[in-house]
Image (cartoon, rainbow, N blue to C red; front, top):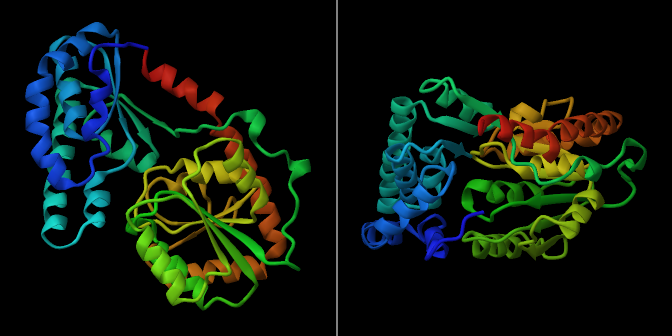
Length: 334
């Protein structure tokens, strides 16, 4: 770990509040911190940089300049993700910025043969067009010892409400609009939903819950960091639902598998790498209320298969546990 003056300022533009902040703050931030950024890069042995925000791109350029080994961590293609957070002129601006940032990253990778750590095969295949040094991984936080054992996996009790779980950022691209619309009219089996997370879309989620009169069936917990409390929720729920419009390889899917939840997720990004529909979970088309309804109906009519899928998913969870994924990271840093 390296500590340098003003290091705590580096995060300012990575989780930026909005596009206006990004456009207005970055030039001044870069000008004021040019020396600090250079000193930081020169002081380290190697860098692991997450793309593609401006400060990340700048760090990669400095790493090349000072001949420091650098590994790029790519979680998702922001060209598809970023515009979904905005409307109107801001959506257009978001699309333009995302394309600009991602193209800069691709050029740097191609020109300097930069090593890439990609979350999921879709991101990995994208960067294989620019470099041969691509490693596919998952950012798992759970340990092998934390994966539920087959003997401790309790079958779903269909005589009581089935416990549904969503964990993630509460944003429009997570498909919560479709999830709540689907559940508002779903009556094949009784259910209760726990929604873990927070974000800009939360006011709309609360409005939809009230509109659909789901207050007694949906629990909002707010953000819960990974740890014992969140792991307890995975283990105490039956089905994990992630109806995202786009993803890399979301760690919550693997965490849910490790906790014994059956995963129902949209067929996007790197999710199909780990969710083999009918074997380790179920996939459905994104942005489709009907597809999600069909997946839930399938679960109800294939209860025996549900248990076999949960069992098989435990094997996937072990494969992607922290101890195994860290070996991939070590290999990429050699």
